[in-house]
Amino acid sequence: MSRELWAGLLLAAYALLCAACWLGHRRRQQRAAAEAAALLPAADAGPPVLVLHASQTGSAEELAWQSARALHLAGLPVRVAALGELTADELLAARQALFIASTYGEGDAPDSAARFVHQLMSRQDLDLGRLSVAVLALGDQTYAQYCGFGRALDAWLQARGARALFERIDVDRGDTAALAEWRQHLSHIAGSAEALDWQEQPFEAWRLVARRHLNPGSAGGPVFQLAFEPADGRALPDWQAGDLVQLQLEGPDRTPREYTLAALPRDGRLELMVRQLRREDGSLGLGSGWLTQGLALGETASLRLRAHSGFRIADNAQRPLILIGNGTGLAGLRAHLQAREAAGGPPAWLLYGERQAAHDAHYTDEIAAWQARGLLAQADLVYSRDGGGPRYVQQRLAEQPERLRQWVADGAAIYVCGSLEGMAGGVHAVLCEVLGSAQVDALITQGRYRRDVY
Image (cartoon, rainbow, N blue to C red; front, side, top):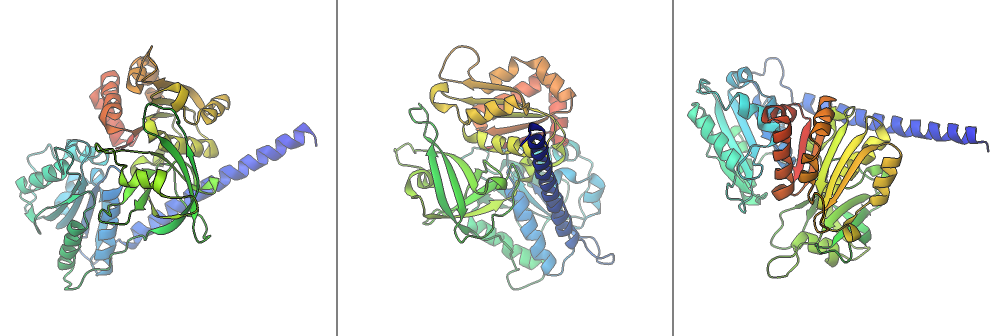
């Protein structure tokens, strides 16, 4: 077969792949639009109940949609929106509003709520005396500012005269008792003595088909690549780069563990990148220990997919990408690079940090191939234990202020995935120093600065 014919066949195959990716994206957009339209009230139904979410990893958004569907099925008109999308006029026109608010880091608002914080919570002239509200605050008691943003939001609403439908409910890491209390109050709002129909995606059995130790000999904790397939042979579900998977554990602590997906459905399996964690007493972490050691090949785990709109590509599909991460945060960045390669678009700049190049250089063959094909315009890989030069990604980023400014001026979107302490905070500080806090806030509001950190 001639080279020209081979080239033609390859181009045709690539075009078909791009078309399939575009059609999949289009179908997902249509499903989301149809779901939102189904909750819209009739013209004579009166003001809808606002169900507003401030979400960093998607948990608050998921609970908002579940709450809205339950109220809608009970006959109430409902509108779901991200808190940052809300205007002052819309809030003043509302009569009832439910706020489901996560906290980012030590008491900060999630990125999706930045516009609301800057433009509305800074105002002292809003009179919300006609508004009845309820606040569900999501948090983690291991942080000093537990549910800090939810509590600040609740205090601001009270200060503006809003009337509480019931006292704020604080939720520690998905506590089922607190969420059950929220559902009970929703029943009262709907005027029902019975529990509302709460639609929640079930966990399903996935079979572990591969597990590979990625960093033998590393000074850091062992990192594993895991692959799962549906246990019953069902078709692989759809997901996007940036989405998460939840693991349901058996036993007393049934709080689902969440992991960023490391690959796309086109690979024919669900892939994760998991670091084995140990407690101070030397025992393995429940989720990571079971996945990396307790679960045998061929056995099943209870998993469910969860959309993470805050870390999806969304409106950044045709923007250059600055991808920044460390450790197992490479999982989410890898998925985005796979998606960009399939769908096409401007190149990306990768900054990634680990411990030792000899042991922790994950997916280097893929990174080199992406560079060779032009998908990666630049890849800065730094290793903290190797010494010499910048040891962390935030330091490497700080060394290139002009490149950073130029990429942002050219329309780049910034995606950060990895540890909250150290890396993500350091990267944010560099961005504010180089670009200015005002421009960083603008990037957050525009959806051009997205973070999946833990």
